Image (cartoon, rainbow, N blue to C red):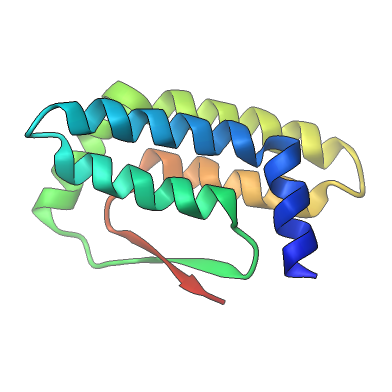
Amino acid sequence: MKTIGNILWFIFGGFVLWLEWFFAGILLCITVIGIPAGIQCFKIAGLCALPFKKEITHEPIKFGNTLFNILWIAVFGWEIALTALFCGILWCITIVGIPFGKQFFKFAAMSLFPFGTKAVRG
């Protein structure tokens, strides 16, 4: 069932989030300073491609993660969060799309604070 969910997810909206995270990672990896953030973007892009049966965990708060999260919100985070929020609202309008909407809301929250999060198999 998770395979079918992941395929439908990627076709009906996951591709958009994957593309945003992937391009954000490419833009950040152009600079030497942005490489750690770019690597995190690629990890989250992989999670956006296949999100079902994965849970997001948060690490303890660290200064470096907090600094990156503040910079992230100012540059990329709010745009990706708005995209995920909009897609989540559209999917939750339909009864059938509620599982997809929940995934989009999960990514909207993670789009604001991506550093210090990990995806583990659920």
